[in-house]
Length: 116
Image (cartoon, rainbow, N blue to C red; front, side):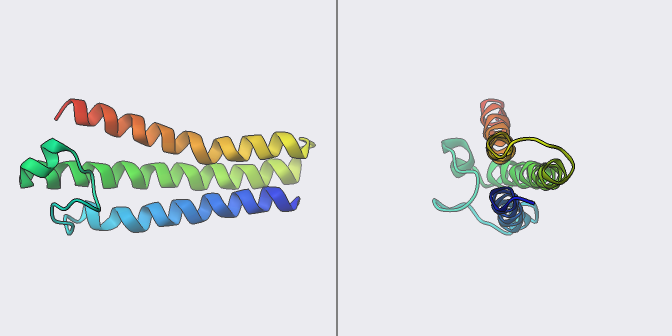
């Protein structure tokens, strides 16, 4: 197991855990409208019912993305262990496994916001 791959995989796991930790209160509806934490748009901040609905959705999608990230982190470790991919390819793949799910999350939330 190469050190760089392990560092990237651990960073994926930490980021996924952080995202889950931040998402649980949103799903539970425990975060009131505010300007710091949650899915903050002019629409969500204007109406508490929209705020809670949007933040529950945001939390659920974020947890789903976190699960995908954990699976990708495990896949990265397995690829490192059982294939002969060169270290540079594994590094690029690992960074993609970290960044692409977050970009998908942003896209989904952007599209959701357009439909509020």
